[in-house]
Image (cartoon, rainbow, N blue to C red; front, side, top):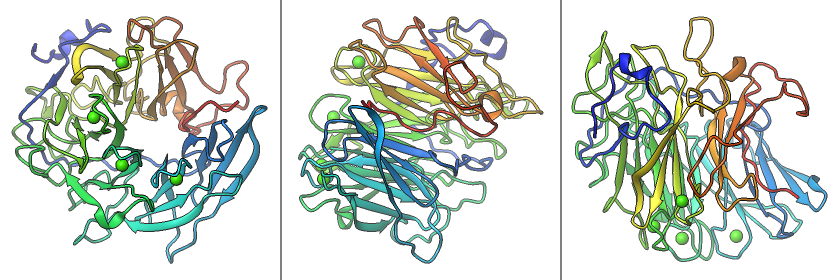
Length: 455
Ligand SMILES: [Ca+2]
Ligand SMILES: [Ca+2]
Ligand SMILES: [Ca+2]
Ligand SMILES: [Ca+2]
């Protein structure tokens, strides 16, 4: 493992920066003074997910607005031949829905929906009918950990998958990104599925302080659980949980009060009892030195979002990790990059690590960091997805750059292949290009909705 490059060396960085990421066995959590929380897009399409809800073999789309879930049903003719709107019951305060995921929590082969609300700190579970009838509200439960109050429960992360290997999907729910005033250690809930659906009575709360995860434990200011993905990285039949902690510290001393830490990603193996810290993996950027009072390479938000899929067609699941402000230099937020870890038999490994950004030769778009007049572009600040976009055996990586073009947003498509991701055929999509309907407007943040195969 080489030392992290100093600023003068960074100009020479190229696409394959294999020195850049380390898997560490020793983890130290740090305190971060965090500059606000991620902006939540409150308009149509702020979050979405796809699945075959009515079991007609066409992918359907579930899209959140502030207070409603819109279901758009696919058909042979494409998407939205039919739609439904679900308005969750009000509960005193106004709901603001902020995340949605699909899983089969009761194992009846019909897709169920889990939706989280930031404002009233609830997770709502809708049981799928597997027919044209809409999913029905089955249960709600709080994200607030036992013994805690309601503050700062602003989690945007939800993921479903079978962690316990019983054929029923389980749910993980992040409890939030920290804010500057935070007095709360975030984490995620594991909620197991059962024959009657999710069983919140059996939920477990996991933080960076959970035994065996990080030697120095959790600290206020962590963001452990800000992103969650379930995938069976080591192919043992149990879904493993990849957890982003984009503001967690990787070094012995705490981060500067004025800046978030550099971030980390943990992978917790699945077992019949749920996620375990035994055999967990920890991925973090190397850090060293201080530059002008700023911790070098703080603020790059490594782990802000995650996506899992097979990007080289070898049937081992690979993990893409967003660092939307990577290349941060002396406090100026950088234009961001995406790290891709490839899976091998034992799970994720460093072999074949790739780092992609708009500075990578052949990748479309212009990398722009922070300037006083505008926000940084944030390559992958709008999230990541791994989807099959062509007819190849490898899946492809979609990088949503929410801050691009005055927050109009754009999507880079990087195609996977037997040789991993390459720049070949990579595309940059935005609303002002020929053939794309509509016109790009500020704050559109194109590309924040998950996609699927609709026809
Ligand atoms: Ca079901
Ligand atoms: Ca399960
Ligand atoms: Ca596994
Ligand atoms: Ca793979």
